[in-house]
Amino acid sequence: MIAQNDRKLNINIILIVAALIIFILLPNYISGYYTRIFTAIFMYATIAQCINLMSGYMGYLPFGHVMFFGIGAYISAILMKTGLPVFVAIPAACFCAIVISIILGFPVLRLRGHYFAIATIGMNGAIMTVVQNATEITGGARGTTFPIITVPPAVVYKYFYLAMFGLMVITSLVMNMIVNSKFGFGIRSIKANEDAANSMGINTTFTKVSTWAIAAMFTSIAGGLYGYWMSFIAPDEVFDLMFITNSIIMMLIGGAGTILGPIFGAFIVETVSEVAWSGFMQYHLAALGIATIIIVFFIPRGLIGTITDKMRNRRIKLSKKTEVTNV
Image (cartoon, rainbow, N blue to C red; front, side):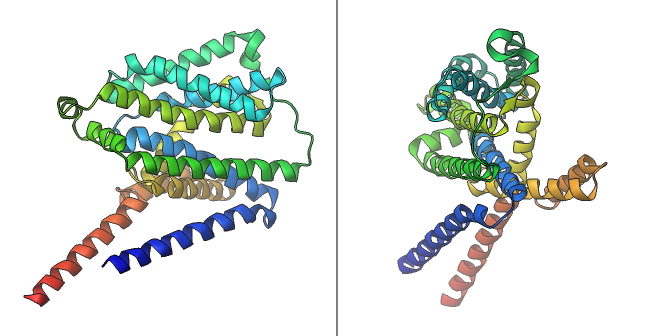
């Protein structure tokens, strides 16, 4: 049994390494159009991982979580326009997002269910309003620009492809480490029964605020990279709730409460979206919605969740057959 488990682990490691190599080399063999699509997939997968940590594992659905995406984009733009390089501006924006998430987390995370979701939407609207009115700093409703990247477009596409891919991989690894740690069991216990977790000695307030800060950290980095990638941002764009809505759909389709779910969900939704856009240009949103409903209807546990359940049921059946044979 141990040898079989070691063999499975080695095979999984080989597959992961092979996938990493393939995706790192992929932009050398595809056009700029497909490079941009993959970059968007990696970005959405990162955000979906953050939503998955909050919702899939902890049971808190932050509809207004896009505020940290916008904060990362805007603070990065403001700092870079003062002359700071991107590798300083984005970490600084990330730090600001963490501080804001902690300040807002203590009061808002006392709410539960739809009250929490509505409160986060309100906070996102409040921050967006501040950005729209701080014209001298943010450019107001007209938006703001990032410093121009003076390299060929092909190099720019590859740069952001690798940056978003690296962010997705790092985010997924960190999330996997968190959910399988002692702290991660505290997160899961909050989803199961928060009152019981609190009575068992788990500091639920610290756990919830820390979890939101971790999710805000990676979301803000994605926002900073997105803003630099687009070179121009506006409040109604980077604070758009559709970023989170799409991420939630990706999480559900891929499988909430799993690490691979958000990644597979991002690939599925973006692929379906591109097909719907090219084939049903005038009705692409309706086509995408119908396709999403069909997928959710047939695999309510998500792709990874459904596969995991089937594999678990198969192992149970095989173990029962083995027991009957031995008897």
